[in-house]
Length: 264
Image (cartoon, rainbow, N blue to C red; front, side):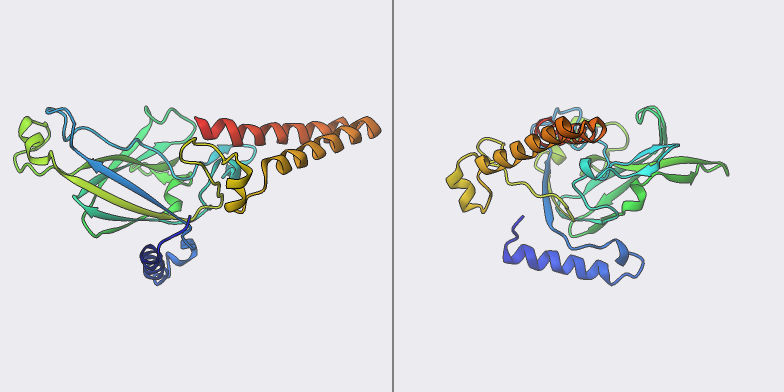
């Protein structure tokens, strides 16, 4: 994405601050993306103000694990650079973020080993460390170790009602109705795609694409067709079905990643 001059200054400041810490430096990579999130209590049910989470539990980087290949970070389903830090700046009302340690190879909802909460206050700089999401053997607290990872989310706004303990009341709604919190999440992305905001797909007009320095769709289609014809010719000439099937599986997966996964 393109940063304004002010946002670029902020990005560079955050990068410089984190890079000064020797134990963080290997994971600090140039930020290429900023995600802006807004959380507010306006419109929430009166008896659920404090209990309503506004962000689901998730991992920024997805890993897979099996006994044959070990721990793998599939590049085709991760847009964030591997082993890169996410830096979150909070502006406005304080928010609470939840961390859950989950056992691998199990239903995440039923195998939560522990849960922790952090308060992100106005002006704070919070770090999501990539090693937390990587599956690893971690102590269960009893001296035994299990393969697990940390996920985060469950974001909610900190309650302003001093009487609020564990049960949300209507007084909480009145105290928090106009609370609003912004966050800026700087991250390092390895994929870039231009999307037309009015259609949620790639710009189709060749004129629009030329202004954005994108190749015409007709040229891209021609290139793909030429590759397909070449592979078919190779198959018909040499009869190498293994090579052809490998290409066909990869091409099918690319189509799925490009068109199907981006729409779900």
